[in-house]
Amino acid sequence: MEQASSYVKPMPVSPKHNGRKQLFENSFLERLTRTHILVPIGIFTTFAIALIYYGAVFKELTLLSIVLPFLVGILVFTLVEYLVHRYVFHMLPDTPVKADIQYKFHGVHHEYPKDKDRLAMPPVLSATIISLLFGLFYLIMGEYAFGFTAGFGLGYGSYLGVHYIVHAFPPPKNFLRILWINHSIHHYKDDDVAFGVSSPLWDWVFGTLPKKG
Image 1 (cartoon, rainbow, N blue to C red):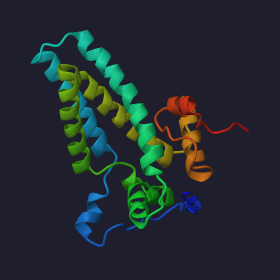
Image 2 (cartoon, rainbow, N blue to C red; image 1 turned 90 degrees about the horizontal axis):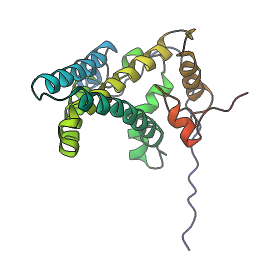
Image 3 (tube, helix red, strand yellow; image 1 turned 180 degrees about the vertical axis):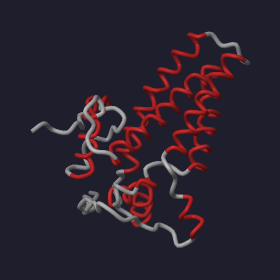
């Protein structure tokens, strides 16, 4: 009979309200881990607009064949955001390699949540990922990939904007307030809930909404 694992999840890191962490000794690699938030938002927004324009003008796609995949792309992004945050960024660091990956990808953000230069993927990585995703989606769904990838990319750009607002500004007095509250709970109270940043939809579906009261 296989022995039960003795692994115990480590205590959450204690958030620091200022400062930043150096991840790499090499200055070039360290620089690649940082970016101003407007750069990746600009990359994903420009890519989305370019895909819609190219699909409409050069591929002569109908409005319906762009708009419907676009909306599905946004919805699918919110699901991917939730799953990656929950199962990749918060994977159990039960080996040294996984612990190192988890910390560099996301743990450092929990330790230094106010470090504004680490609230998004670096530009080179952002551009590479959205380009590869478009290629993958095109293989799967053909010309519907123009609208779908545009929606997916704009969904990510919106996520970046919401994430930045949550960490850089006081609680807003509009519809973003609930997102601000949920993400603050995730960072400062219970990192096993509120994995959705741009939307609470999948937390509601999978039962990981913060408990009231």
